[in-house]
Length: 157
Image (cartoon, rainbow, N blue to C red; front, side, top):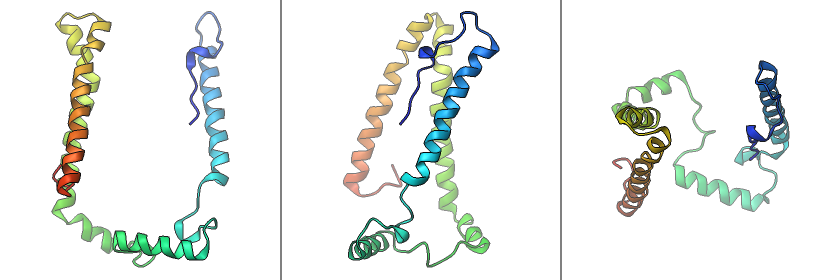
């Protein structure tokens, strides 16, 4: 992965619109270069892979089919099939759960430093006081991942 630090790019001593353009141009050039290189680096679809021997490809395809229960080439996606799946209440329950989780996480990430600063903490102290929330979240995420794996039931967790 290509990463560039904006502070390491020489810019004009007085911030102007031209100095910030330089950062975006450099990052854009890197992005375009990686995209062009990716054309030759990204592996094709598994059915069209050329780097596997025929028996390896057959074994891989049979394992994928046994794991997923279907092949992408067997049933094309049609509007009727999409509507069928959109009528499933479990899909909408998963959407609601996902929205509930992401909205809570986003509100904590975006507003907790501001709330802590409003309570009276300094900016750096407010940032430091957000760390326990993220550590607690990480511990719960890893714990629930192990529990869901132990019970072999992932949807409820």
